[in-house]
Length: 297
Image (tube, rainbow, N blue to C red):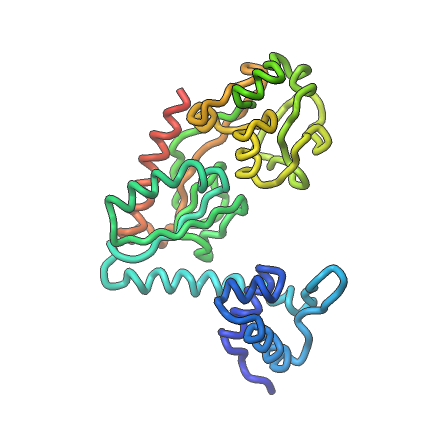
């Protein structure tokens, strides 16, 4: 009867499932590709079944690999949390805090806030998971999350610190070249930046007076950070937070005809509420993001 697979081998399997290729997984694990390949071969021998099939579409995980995937994700999250907790075990003002945030919040809003935190607490290291995927705080994918909707998970400590408003914006150069649309009907005659395959989530209440399909956009990408970069480059008209638009010197268009607001929530698992370094980060984010939300006016 085969023994329990080594965690090192399982980490390599998790890396391949996350990265999609052996080469990318090897980079994630800081291994050579041949070493990672040997890990997968050894694991397949121990399990007695293949984990991946190679096809013209690339590497395809088998049903066995897909069945193992959620368990491996739980194990990886637990191992990461244990590593962060072990570093700060002797002194809770020392160690690591892992923060999760959406693309735009992580790239545009949090950097100066986290820089101020580092100045105040130089012995606490920060990891930031930047993704529009909602990290699972119950399994410690992250310690603290900045979310744009009320959390629904159980056993989560959450604090609403404010709201941010969104509108359509363009660069002054774009407006000078193409004019300033005043109505939604006029807006459709312009170059619009929007989603590719993933429509806005249900929490984003958007009404443009007609069905919102990918075909109305001249630039399509599901990366919010890329949309913002193209907006700043003058490619066309796109949606962004009012604070970001003002800071970037952008011009709001169809003001009064379009806009929506989202909450800002700071969240962490209730088991961490007595951990000093987690409380330091939670309270710092709450204070600075409340000040950021207040800029909306």
